Length: 210
Image (cartoon, helix red, strand yellow):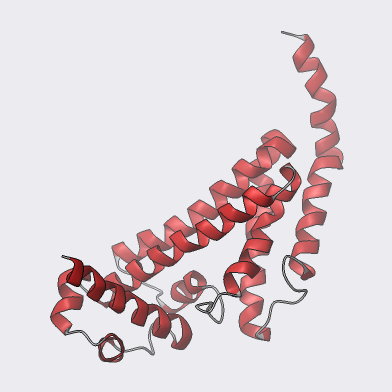
């Protein structure tokens, strides 16, 4: 079992290195097998298909990304910093030796217009996790406006990731740049803007009615 597990790790390592650098469509199964030094039977026994392998590689990457984000959440000093920690985490993750040219999930979604059910589920999980986390982190700051703010931040995060493909770098360094500045403006407006002021004004009234 240990040998089989190590073989599958080699296969995932090779898949991640090739798929998320050269592209899912451009990378052949034969290239992955050659890099991993395993047989076709190993791939199809473990993952069923190339798309199954892609999904498994994405799932592993997703878990590693969440661990990086969790570490940044632990370092954050207040609710605002926790919500914005996603941008610091993105730069930390990208600075790793296995950092891809851009988001592996966005790249796969762009290449695979009609993904298999297993791959579609993996892609949806990543988007759903990001949306849910941003929403939950926004609740202490904006309460019922958390879903709207999360959608805005999700768009900023996606744009930041896409710009990496255009420019090759993320402008502004770790946790900085245009995307972080835009996100800060959105967060501060949600807290102090008209909607935020209305929520603050309604809060004492709600408390007094109890």
